[in-house]
Amino acid sequence: GQQLNQSPQSMFIQEGEDVSMNCTSSSIFNTWLWYKQDPGEGPVLLIALYKAGELTSNGRLTAQFGITRKDSFLNISASIPSDVGIYFCAGDYSNYQLIWGAGTKLIIKP
Amino acid sequence: GAVVSQHPSRVICKSGTSVKIECRSLDFQATTMFWYRQFPKQSLMLMATSNEGSKATYEQGVEKDKFLINHASLTLSTLTVTSAHPEDSSFYICSVLAGGLDTQYFGPGTRLTVL
Image (cartoon, rainbow over all chains, first blue to last red; front, top):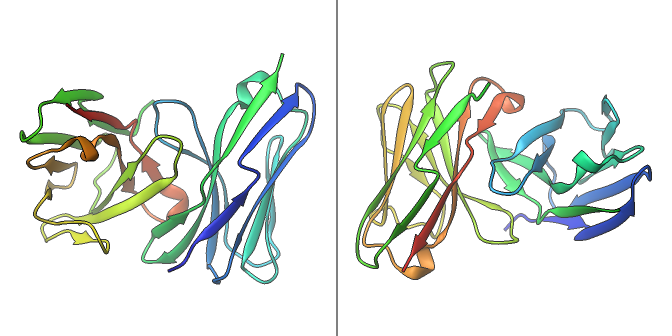
């Protein structure tokens, strides 16, 4: 079946550093979405991408929909403590049903 | 404020009992809701699509007789885990589709622990 490969699995960074994570798939998706999940809560949408090649920003976050429609990346610039959490990519495969990546856990070193 | 609520937030039950989890859309009417489960340190897995007034559509490998879904109104969907067993312990999350994919709002989740 379809799967999303998300990397890295976890990241340890210093406050102020930039962060980059990505997702790849063997299948084509029409939509890529990036979510953040805090412990014990549901995911919150960060960025939605609808067109191949699309580059979208949301504050310090930037995400791109790959030209091949099989990949996407998320960048976070100048990380701050509240950025900690787990980031998930998700792709829409049918009727708003999503396939999810395994998540990237972001940890900021004090 | 919250768009989607879930109740209870945590539940502990004995093996063999049934547990009902409610998902409510607070700000709008939702014809479509989704139910996910998430194991520790893992991703969300779609269990079923809940459609108001009709039968839910279950993903492959999800037992419809074990995970009963009732979407009786435009603001409420319920998931009942029947005859729960320890392996059903998980974080159950619902989401509400308000329009397009960028308007899929997730509930805060329900932590189920089956002893």
